[in-house]
Length: 129
Image (cartoon, rainbow, N blue to C red; front, side):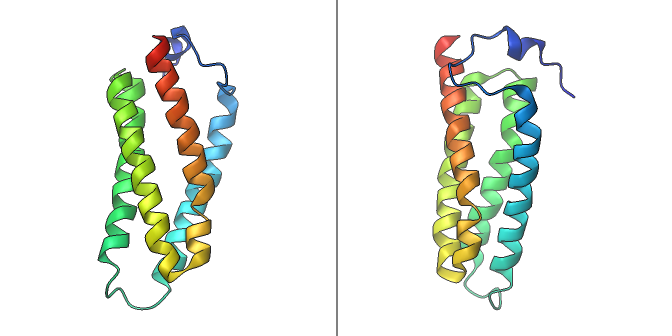
């Protein structure tokens, strides 16, 4: 587990959740992200799916990039930019997946809302500190 002393020393937004909530939420979200991808891939051949798969890969890339940027590099502003890109690519993934499988798109909606909440938290931490 990362040393959270730096994070806890920051001025926190009013709606900051307790630390324990993040692990179960992310486990749930990663499961739904994977199921969404599997359902999408099962909707026929891969022909014409390059764009949705690119968006899916980009959202995963920015998802994985955010934590080290924020917690290890302690770069709150860059993490905020990454989070904004993450929101954008999740939205684009949902929009593209919807054309092939409505369920695969719907499964990503909780993820989008959680990342929007994370964007709010990141923005407020940047603003307050």
